[in-house]
Image (cartoon, rainbow, N blue to C red; front, side, top):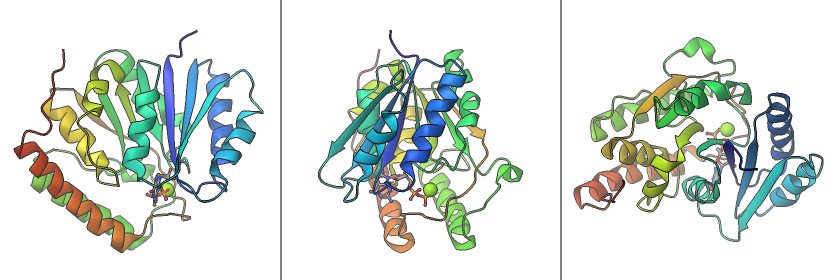
Amino acid sequence: MEPELSIVIPAFNEQDRLGATIRQILEYVSANNIRSELIIVDDGSTDDTSAAAEEVAGEFPAQTVSVIRYQRNRGKGYAVRTGLGAAQADIALFSDADLSTPIGELNKLIDPVRSGEYDLTFGSRALDRSLIGTHQPWRREQGGKVFNFVVRLMTGMPFWDTQCGFKAFSMPKFRPLLDVMKIDRFGFDVEFLYVARLHGLRLMEIPVRWNNDDRSKVNVLRDSIRMFDEVRQIRRNARNGKYNVDIE
Ligand SMILES: Nc1nc2c(ncn2[C@@H]2O[C@H](COP(=O)(O)OP(=O)(O)O)[C@@H](O)[C@H]2O)c(=O)[nH]1
Ligand SMILES: [Mg+2]
């Protein structure tokens, strides 16, 4: 039977965090009778990420779990696009491997897509900060605010947190756009929202709970520089018509 929801987890060197995450997700979907498929994308990990995923998946024979892997690390954006490209269901969600947004927040994003009211819904840590249990380190949180301010200035988008790793999509609407997406690293969230908006999809930023996991793989200096550069690339791509695509 076709799944009603595809859940994508981008994973880079996540052998320590991924097992517990998969278990929590599969327990949640079975307890709530959600017909889902789980797609793990191993983004060129150098540890035993794939094996860890397969091991836990083996504990849930009734659930559909697939692991996609490739040799070279390409970035979270590339990994998420790969997972969405493989998604079978009409609704897809991606979540970080550390479940910083608990999987119980799922319905907040899925319901407005299922009802047809919105095409892309995304978690936000900026709309209701009282939902944040464990904060990111102070510098990282301030950096996030600056990044979002720059994104608003450079793209004209009215959002407050583009970077939360918890986003849901109406795949019939979003799938054609995957072909024109180009940003492979952490700027991809901005590109997703920008291109979706450009093509008239209906977007909603939704406050979600967040408990930061401090075992972050992000290198603040290197990855921040790349992100600003990627936002400039998005503007350039838009100007050069790189995001033109026929959607029905
Ligand atoms: N850092 C990093 N994360 C990646 C990459 N590819 C996929 N990911 C995944 O992106 C998600 C966010 O990473 P995380 O380290 O938790 O970031 P943070 O919580 O924002 O500091 C996790 O699911 C990672 O496994 C990559 O190339 N680098
Ligand atoms: Mg994290």
